[in-house]
Length: 326
Image (tube, rainbow, N blue to C red; front, side, top):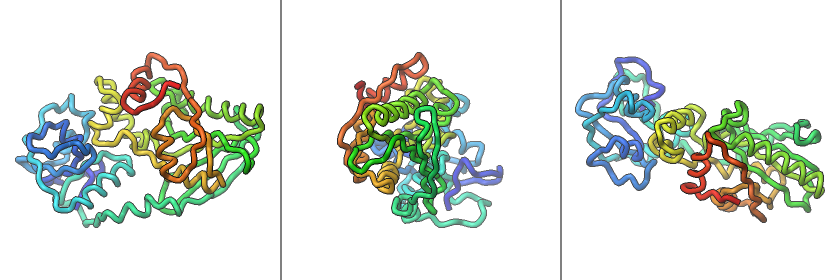
């Protein structure tokens, strides 16, 4: 039985083993751990004493490292249920919780089976469908239309904003924008998400106004590049301790890039869009959409000025994630 450390409650729960990611195991400096070249692979650890919740949470959450610097000793053990362990870590990411589990803990209630096949319905984009659409006047375009998408197997509801008149012969300007509560809504200066969103909408409006073209903004419900708002804020805590965005995600045991590009491709397909001009400075996004079946006719540069709060973030995207300057 696997019990997520973050959702567990009750001081009586104890476990002899924990399941964590290889990246987190590397942070804990396990002397006999497996090679952490695959940072999101599962690692099974055993302590000298059973883990209770008070001890387990600082092991799972690196944002608590400064307050709980001494951990261990731990021993890494072989996993005889590798596929299920990998599925468990991925399910944790999807749920937006820390990728750490107590193994067969005492007094944990009735067991629920975990199988690698549990992820199949989640990743099946064929179930995504248009739920509804409506006219939505926005600052960039008073004639914009919003289209909402939903899948019976996914609680996330994505949306597309269409600016200009959709024409089958015209290749639209498309922006794939992942949800960012802090940037899009609260005006955070730690990232460039809010300005990118606003700039993209106005670029599409100019395309419609000046060239009789049109544009599509795909607004994807995948906060923090797919790790969720809580884990994104945990990463912010680590950034305040001196780590960059990539390092922070690795210390959390989470991928730096976990966005669902096949869902974006399915949304475009449902809109009748096969070929696009993609507004991005990320070549990996172009490659991911093409792999998902979208023909990217052109990459259109989308660069905005930095500020004192996000300069390192943008430099990390350039230096570690391959983003272009133009």
